[in-house]
Structure formats: structure tokens, C-alpha cells
Image (cartoon, rainbow, N blue to C red; front, side, top):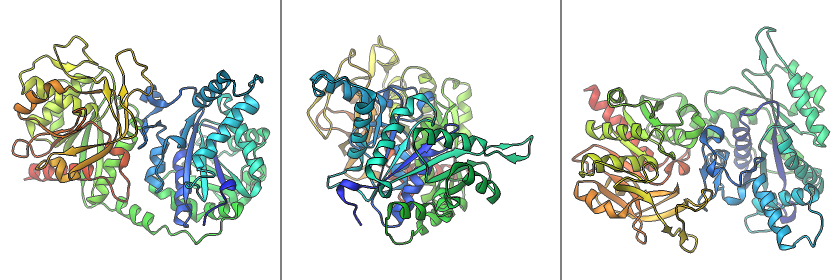
Length: 556
């Protein structure tokens, strides 16, 4: 079925009490169930911060920056969306308060408002609604049956008020049959009292109703299932129907959440509210997925040598991609974080106990030498190695220093005065979508990286060719590149440049020959953004296979 272009039904998902309750997972799970009913679904994330995008925000503050095919730097929740549903995300599926204000101010400067006083209502709220319509593809061939819009932040925060007011207005315009509100809340267990407390949920719904929004469903997060008695109480005090009070307890895998919500009738409630007449949900593939996760036939342990190890959200997509590859091989993948700032030549021997080593992306010089040590240890000891983005760059620096006779080799980002900048700032490149892009050391940091999906040819007879075939197309997010001036010297020393762009000669993949090392690969792109629990990703599947082989060799 397809909704009329002008009346695309929208489900607005809000959060209350505290952040980090899993609003993105809940929204993605609802979308997955609706998709399992045969509906075409898209999703959006509205972020209330003033940054134009999360691209220059610290991973400690924001977690991972997710990148779409069209080069948008977005919230990590878009990664959940792409892993849970088949619709691909794009620039229009994520926007911030900063983008909204930037657009409105640009219109004001051009005179689009004909000299009117520009105000939060109606100008900001109208612009938010236009962005939502654009994300849902309203009036275009990309229009969907239902759009799910997740509003970042917590109800009651001053910064999210314009978004909430905008969606209240939008729901009013759409009419009750085309808009639904789902509110994620928290029901804490108070050990001293020995009971669950519903008061925080009552208060957050009260706050929502003061704004003019009555939720149709409450997703009540807790560390345990919520008994019927408490659900009755929540229903009574929030004016939400009893069947709309949904218990969402802690699960040992996120892939259990769609079944959890479905069995409590959330999808049925939404379909009735929006008059979406569909077939019953078929969640068999989710059941098979959960069965695979819960019944592994073995395990491998990966050392991730990074510098954002205190916050696992920094590597959200990467962790999931490794687990997806584990599912493919019917093994559990254990990920142990190694703080690259603390890694020394003496402590590097600790890496011997792992089945493989992975060095993820990052920015700046902090922890770089530790990452270089991790790459060196993997190379010298035959441990499977995967370097992603900065992980490829440190492997290149390490090889230049110890194998190509360039003892002082470094990245110009970390050591601007280095005599051998084997990793340097590229000043011109071209992506697949437009004219050549240019930058220099004085360019804005925001939005000036090499971003989005780009393709390059793959060298025959390499590990890269075994994985990708003749062409690799992956998403990028980086500012510095392998310096073309040093490529020949590195190749002469034995490093294989297995994928390179034709126009700019930008290095996309490096590796060591199989006769030198069983599996040593570095990639400039971010393959983790294209991994799904259903198909995994060929690069990570190959990497986990190498880890299994290494574990087997060590056992013998």
C-alpha cells in the first residue's frame, strides 16, 4: 500500500526522564515490525543541538558519527535505522537545530520573508515541518507508507521545545488519523523500597501534555518486565490506554526488541491509529537472528586498540559489524578495548593473547604512537590485522618507519614538521556526485572531509580482490590521505596498494602479501557503515575467518 502523497502518516517518537534509554533502538524496532507487515518505512532523527552536524563533535560527547552514501555526517541512530530496515538513509533523514536556524537566517538575509519579523513561531517551526516532509519524501516518488520521526533530547529540555512545538503543529495539520505519538520513558527500580516507581513516567507525560501532545503509546524502560498492576497505574495517571503501556525491559541483544514490542501489540496499535491495513507481521528472520546470537558454536576475541575506549558508542557500527561477521561464522565475537594511549613497546606483548587486532578511526595525535605499536606488533607476529581509516594510516606510517627506511615518517596532522609526511592533507578530490572539491589548512573543519560513497579499482590477486572483486565502493569520512609521493617507495619495500582511486591516486586499501603475513589489511574508508545483521559485510567476514584460523594455529 502507498499513502496519499499529501498525507504520509507519521509516528513521532519522543523520550523522557533521562537520556540513553535506547530511543533509537525502540524507533528502529517499531520500523522493523511495520516493514515486516509489508509497509514501506523511512526514519528521521531530529537533533536539538546547534551544531550544523555532528562531524566536529567529540566522540566522548556524541559517540559515533555515522555517514550516509550521499556524504551526510549524521547521528549514530541512523546506523540503527539502516541495520534494522531496508530503506537507505540520506542527508534528509537527519537534521539539527543548527541546520534549521542556518536555513532560516539565510532566507532572512536573502529577503525571502519580505521584511517580516522572523520568529521561532512560525518561521522556525515551519522550517522544521518542511524538513520532516522532505525526509519522508512527501509529494515525491520516494514517498513512503509511514515515516517514523525520532526527536532527540529529553522532554522538558529547553533546547528541544521548538521541535516538540513543530511536531505538535504538524500533527494538528495532518489530523488524528495521520499522526501518532510514542513516548519512551523510564520506570526505575528502587532497591531500598523494593519496588518499581512510576512517578517519573507520570511527570514526563504531564510535561508532554502541557506542550499539547498526548502520547498514544508509552514504552516503559526498566531493568525488568513491568507487572500489570504498575501498567494499570501508569495508564490511569497518563491518560494512555492500557494496551498502549508497553513494557521494554533490558535485553541481552538489541535484536530481541522487535519481537518484544510486537508481542505487546505496539505495531497493531499504530496501524489501527493510522488506519494502515496490512498483513500480519512476519518476524521469523528476527527469530532466526536471535537464535544465531544465542547459540554460537565458538568464539574469538578481538583487541580494539583505540583512543575512545571509555565510551563504546564511539565504535557502535564497528562493534555491530564485527558481531554480524561472527553470526555469519556461527561464533561469538568478544571485543576487548585496549587504550592506545597506554600501549608501550613493553606492554604490546599483551596483544599476543588475542585472536586478531583492530585499529579503528580517530582524529588528532593523541594515542597515535600506541596505534602504530599495535600495527607493528600485528605485522611482526603474524596476528590478523584490520586498520580502518586512521588504522590504515598508522599501518602505513609503521611500515614506512620500519620497512621502507623512513625513520621519521609521520602524518602531517600529528607532526606538521615531519620530514616524511607519508600521510598528508589532500587539497583536491572528487566524489561521485559532483565537481572537484578543494580545501587547504585554513578550510573550515566542518563538512570539508572526503565524505560519502566513492569507488575505486581493486588490484587482482590481492586479499582485497578476494573480498570485493574488481571494484570497491564504500563510505568515507576523513581529511588526511596516504601521500602519493611515497607510494612507490612503500611498494618497493613490499607494501601492497590493493585499491586506489584513478583520478587523484588516493590510497583506499593497503595489505601485506599472504606469503609474508596471513591477513593484514588497512582500509581508508568505513566498511562498518554498510554491514547488516542479515548479510554481514565481506571484509569483516574475511577478517573474522582470519581470526578463527589464527586461533586454530595457536591451539595446535
